[in-house]
Length: 229
Ligand code: SF4
Image 1 (cartoon, rainbow, N blue to C red):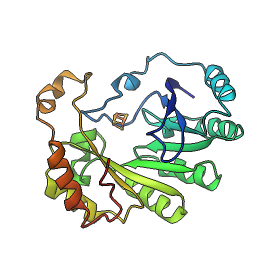
Image 2: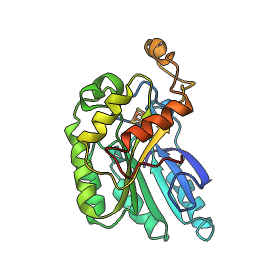
Image 3: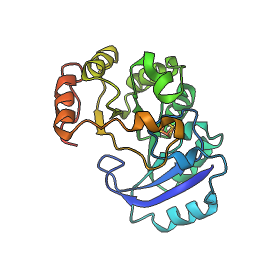
Image 4: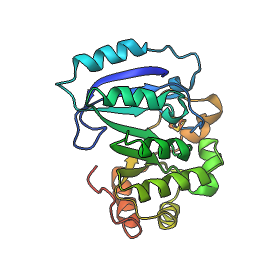
């Protein structure tokens, strides 16, 4: 696995589980507000897998889970064998994905290798290309469907950017199925960005009050939205 980052412990990335977090290298999207832009660089330095497993082996009695995030973890060819090895050390696994590889998620679910999944729902389908440089949104819909039918604990999550109106957020939430948990996160302007995105990144984020109002508006369509994050 191409792992380019490791957080030894986190209480906020895996609901109700104290977990370490690993960041995989590479992504098939290019969201203009990406906060992990260094992971998109194919030359980003890697942490050897032996080092990651050495860490997990030592922490077995101190942390309960591992969050695999990115980048986009489902692009990693050896993701399945990596997770199987981590699970053998009794860790719970949370996978963070942009939803572009439904077949990978399905295979991991069928092999009982996942305990929790978070899928990004970044924008109205018609605006994915503009915002994430990705157009095959049918894959993301398919990932939602697979998770919905699987019975696993999962969530959809959205970073609320000022370039999308509250009404658009409501409409995209109406179009989706009922998520078991839905998280709308505050947008922060990234420190690292592409020069061509500078102009659109200058748009001021929604205030906290505006974000709260968007969450309340969207609750009409998504009953399980978190109102307290
Ligand atoms: S999907 Fe995530 S890692 Fe990939 S470009 Fe978008 S924000 Fe960055």
